[in-house]
Image 1 (cartoon, helix red, strand yellow):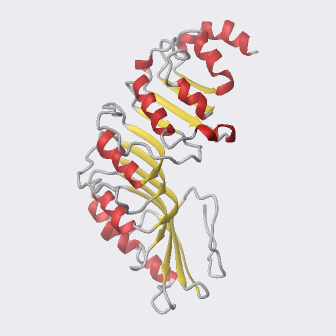
Image 2 (cartoon, one colour):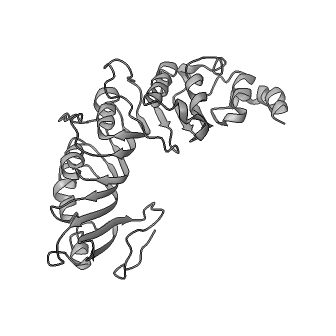
Length: 321
């Protein structure tokens, strides 16, 4: 069936194809079957790490493509235990670099969206190693906050849309503190399932640089001992600093270490702080766990893309998805 498709069907329709979604098993057969004069988008799924390293280091598979014509690329590198031995600390950085060396006119890139491998990308790389003056939209997973800053400031400061999933968000000696504004950024999504202890020191100052942002999406697990995150703090720390923001999506799970329940706001108080968020339905839940001496506050805008609820007690009012 694949041979017939490549030998008979593709040569008849190749000039009409603008985008190809390919899996590892059929990728080489289809890409080498014919030329694609109008192809501008390419998605490669289920590629193992070893294949990705060779794929973007050689032109063999892409010989029949006009690589400068490819403006959109999706790369999904699978998590395959057989290839763990070659997962050095630089492997993602190497693949990422090779992509931009090969496809020099990319405007859209999704890199490794479903893989669970988090590795550092660009820290300590020479300033000229990876840069694209064309890339407008980037979806990527990175290890730490330093990677995010390097991507925004050193490599792709012309980005219009940036979706990033970070494993570690914390203040370290290697964290780059930059105050440069990001005038081109219009859409920013920041996801992290790991504990964030430096929300006020890292996340808030970063958002202050995005003066022209129109859409913001935050999904964070925050540990904070200086009060609760609510509608008032969102306005003071974020909304008032981004005057053009017209869509704010969030899912914040906040843990706060407190010796007693005296200063814990009620769920009604939390809801009241969102009185100015009239175009968005806000779901909230506040609880206190006496044995562990911490409070928990979950606030999210509806609808949201959560897969599960956690830390549910009898105080949970029932949620919406």
